[in-house]
Every structure is written in C-alpha cells, then in structure tokens.
Amino acid sequence: MLSIITNYKILKNAMVRFGKSRVAMFQNQMFGWMLFGFYLSCFGLIACQNSNRNPVPDVSNIAADIKWIHFERELFALDSNKLNEGLLALIQKYPAFTKLYFTQIVPMTEQLDSIQPEFSTALRTFINDPFTKDLYLKTNRVFKEDQDLSKSMLHAVRLMKYYFPDEKDPVFYSLISNFNFANFIFSDKNNANGIGISLEYFLGSEMNYKMVDPKNPVFSDYLTRCFNKDHLLKKTWETYLTDKLAEPQSGKFIDYIIHRGKKLYILQKLLPEIEDTVLFEFTPKQLKWCNQNRLEIWSYFLSGSMLYSTEFLQFNKYINPSPNSPGMPEDAPGQTGSYIGYYLVQAYMRKHPEVSLPELLAQEDAQLILRASRFKPTNDK
Picture (spheres, helix red, strand yellow):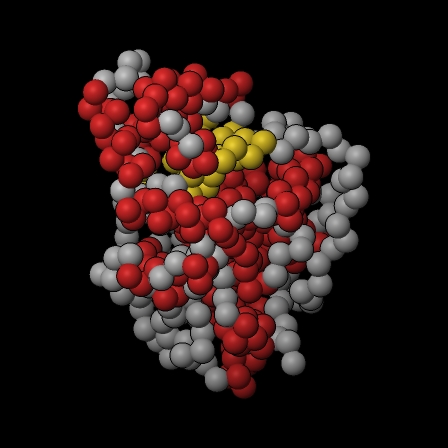
C-alpha cells in the first residue's frame, strides 16, 4: 500500500478542482431563525446540543511506543567524504521511507537497488543547496526542543489505541521536502503506518512564506497562517484519518459536511487539548463569528437545494480551505461546512453513545447520521 496524502498536493490519480461557488444572500439573523424553524419542521430535528467536550479517558496505562525519526537530521549528518556508504546505511535502516523519499517526495532516482553516480550527485546538490540548508537550519531552531511535542504525540497515540485498539503504533518521520509535500502516509515495515511530516510547513514566524513562491496559491495568507508548530499535530493526525476516511461516493454537499465533521470530531478525540482555532483553522475573530452564527450558517445550507447539491464547485469553499464562504458576510471564513459538520456529528454521537469511533468511521450513510442527530445548532451569545 502506498498512499500519499497531503494538505496541498495529492499524489494519486486525483483532480484538483477550482472554480467559483454560487453566490447568494446570507439571511439576516431574524430571517435565519424563521427559515431555520421551517426547515427543522421539514427534517424533524428538534433536539438541542452544545459545544462542551466530553471528558478525556485515562490512557496512562495503555502501552504505546512513539517512534519519531528525524530523517532530516540523519540525512544532513552524512559525511560528504563517505556519502555513498552513509546513503546505503540509511536505505538499509529505513527501506520503505527512503524509497518513497528519494523516488517521489524529493525525486533523485528511479530505483535504489544500487547507488548510481547521478543519484549521489543529486543528493550532494540537494544537501548543499543554500535554500535547503537554510530550511534545515530553521527546522533545527524551531524543533530543537520538542519534548512537549513528543509528549503530546505519545498521548495521541495512546488515545488512538484506546479508540482503535486494533491499530498498530504509527511511525513518524520528519523530513525536509523543499515544499514538495506537507504530510503523507505510507506502508512502513511490518505494515505499520508511516507518516511523513515536512517540517518546513510548520516554521511559523521563522519563515517568510510569501517569499518562497509569491505566485503559488499554496502560500496565500489564509493557508500560511496555519504553517506553524501549533498546527503540526492536527495536520499529522488529519493525514492519518484522511487515509481511513474515504471521500463521499455520492458527491452530495451533505455527505461532505458529515465527512469533514467526522474527521474533525475524531481529531478532537485524539487531540483533546487542541484549541478550536487550530481544529477549525480559524482566526479568533473568525471562530467567534462562526460560534455566534451557527444557526444562520446551517439555515443557509438548508436553503434552496444546496444541501443535496452534487455540484462540487458550488460548495467547494465551504468544505476546503478558502479565504471566505461565498454568500455569507465578510467575517465568515472558508470551511464553514466543515465547521457545522463537526457540531452535527457531535450531536449524533451524544445521542448515540453506543457508537464507537470505528463504527462512526465505517458509517457511510450521511442521511442516517443527519436524521439520528436531530441536529439543532444554537448560537453563542
């Protein structure tokens, strides 16, 4: 199994879809309440829910081994006078990862059966490249003391084994990809999940991301705002869950809302200390607006035929990173559909505590979750 998943690139036979979403008027608060009441009566949704999180289970006695391999450090520590010998040692030590890294993540060769002169030259050029060396120095400064990060990752692994007892301990590889990929997942030895983490995507103020490639939308402000250490755990476990949670087959907006909601809900279970601004990738101002307009957001999605639309471009910005949500006020961020999906799934799980997280992952009937949630969002004051 080789599955490479990243927040900014997808190495599969996949399409990147862009386009304008439908623009419509966002109902004012009074009309939102009226409209919401009408749609609730149609859907039979009558219960309330709140945003309080459930208690965190005690997992201190769960055996877990965190394997965090700083591949970038081992790579840059190679003796330039004995480069081939050092490279062979790395390949033997991390066979699955090095094959992926040197052939696809930072492609230097097509095969690793033998060290060809062209491969050695490409590696030497990569290691000595000023831009790459600067990235390496920056990552060393930012992640020099990462005990807290390792502790949080270990807690997440224990929670993963608590909720998903059949899962093997994943192996985490940090690396430098020169911005080719953010996070990815692959089959490591013994069929364990290997998760790659490109540290240059989490440097925060240490890196002037605008200057990396000013014309590349990957470095837009609304994305680079999350390129910091605080978002590393969220992005890493999001990669893990993306591999387990297949994209909706029907392609309806409601299916995507619940799909994204399931992912965020499970992320919060694995990372119980995560801030909402990190979970939803909102600024504090954007989060406040969403919290004060949950009901209106849901009413807007219920209006017309949007909820059951299969026109991906119509709802793309509501479920994927975007600077805004078309048709809503300027204060509304993108991904409002994902945000509301979290609360919908939360309502479903609170009404059905017998449902385990693996069962939630496996449940592909979005309509069943919608009905059983009896979802009725309320606004924060």
